[in-house]
Amino acid sequence: MQRGTPSDQRPTDVYFFATCLVDLFCPEAGMDAIALLEREGVAVHFPQDQTCCGQPAYTSGFADQARSVALKQIQLFPNDWPVIVPSGSCAGMMRNDYPRLFADQPELQAQARALAGRVFELAEFLLNVLQVKWNERVQDRSEPVTVAVHTSCTARREMGTYEHVHALLGQLAGVKVVTQEREAECCGFGGTFSLKLPAISAAISDDKADAIKASGAQSYVSADCGCLLNIRHTLEKRGDALPGKHLATFLRERLSTPDDKS
Image (spheres, rainbow, N blue to C red):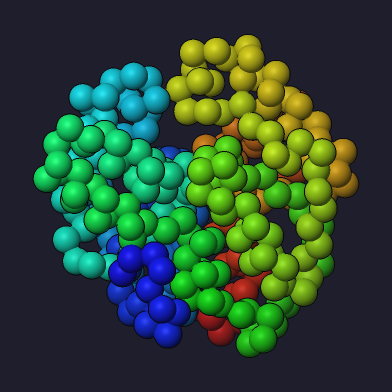
């Protein structure tokens, strides 16, 4: 399924690319994302040999290593099904950078472009393709909560999925979204950036944590685990107990009912 497919052709099968951060640090986000897709009647297929998308190597200047990793991922999705990624950062790598990696190899670039055309960030897929309207058919039974949103740089500037997160949260009656002052700014993670320039990364993350706290939010939500982990660790180091959740986990918890076993 390519982007732009008529909305009446609702996909019945999708691939799920979990990302290495979800696999290693936030497995619940991956499971909750799959549960959200399955509750919409979609069969989710998880290729067991998936690894990293290759972004750390690519952004560090190791193009050959990034190509090797990317090629292995491209080969994991043979059927013409959407590939759902619970991270704007990794989805951006697969959609925008895979074709660039193989610019000098026409046959492989064609494969990369074919895959890129069916890569979707989770929120984008739920809203634009599945066209979920939870406010019309699911009651938000959880306690009212005020949340702040953090969108990763890639999700905001490359994938354009900033509005999708807000639109999904807006379907939940008990959720009030407040704008934090630095919502459009980086959290300081930046993949290997936080390892190479830890002092700068920490200063950026402190500014982000200050803005979330100042917003009056009771919690914060992000659709990218890297950002979520960075902000969470910053707050924990400061002794702040403000909870944060991946978008998939937050949505699934709000949408679950007592008889929901998914």
